[in-house]
Amino acid sequence: TKPLLKVEGLKKYFPVKKGMLGKTVGHVKAVDDVSFTVNEGETLGIVGESGCGKSTTGRMLMRLLEPTEGKVEFDGKDLTDLSADEMRKTRRDIQMVFQDPYASLNPRHTIEKILEEPLIVHGVKNPKERKKKVHEFLEIVGLSAYHAKRYPHQFSGGQRQRIGIARALMTNPKLIIADEPVSALDVSIQSQVLNLMQDLQKDFKLTYIFIAHDLGVVRHISDRVGVMYLGKMVEIAESEQLYLEALHPYTQALLSAVPVPDPDFEKEQIILEGDIPNPANPPSGCTFHTRCPFKMDVCTKIVPKLVEHQSGHSVACHLYNEVGQQ
Ligand code: SF4
Ligand code: MG
Image (cartoon, rainbow, N blue to C red; front, side, top):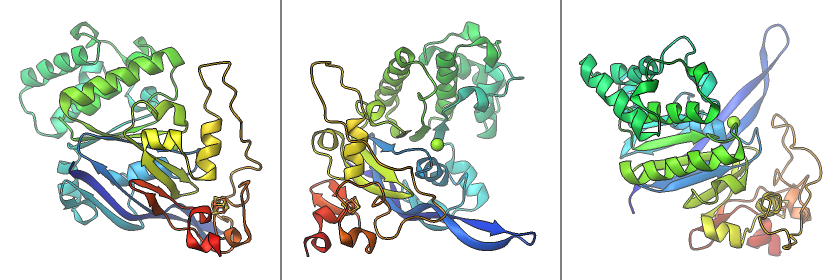
């Protein structure tokens, strides 16, 4: 396994401004020192509640948003060093699929025009060649050339997401960042789209970052899963390992909320107390301490570091480090 993407110390701080002069009075640490690696051909799931920084992380990887700090190495290149022009060229290798395909597809353009656009941007000059590729990719995502002249509103939510996926594939990318691609779809449609994404991954040797707010959705598609809370990665492990033996109390709570298919199997539900704290004024020490059932004195004082607990399984919690044993 070869790493395709290496993220190191990624941060995004948004200034909080006050008054008529817009004086900066603080920062929202939307993403606060996040590091991870994605290997070629694998799927990394990133999970957390809304506002945890997962989408902001995804957008920074494509430099749709400039990081405040940190390094993003893709295919041997440091993306944060690239000029706008070099970044534009690199974007053909990294594509994004969005949660709401309706909002991301221009309503006044035909599907053909929408799918042709990335080809034009990346220099495919021959219109015949472009049309051929558009029709080919419509078939690949389970639609047909017959749909090419239609407009986005003429499709169902699931079909629109297939179009969003086709658009992402047009430039033969290596990495696809899918930001909650099935969250807006009915459960029955969700599995169809997930199956399609898995088939495409094999056929086109794609690497995925799959962002979701629910651990249930990423379970089958992910090789590894990272869990984020208030801008930090709090646990990361191989998928099966995480579901069998979640270490972080937050991950345990998220898992307890995933419905089990067997109604006879009673699962102990962990109810998290309190709301997600205000990210502009996060709790001291471990930011999860205001909701954690296992909170210790040290948790309010010292920020737990993400450390490897066993091979390939890292967690940021004092229950598993020396600080917490004192
Ligand atoms: Fe809970 Fe403390 Fe672990 Fe944070 S460090 S998750 S508060 S036990
Ligand atoms: Mg989001």
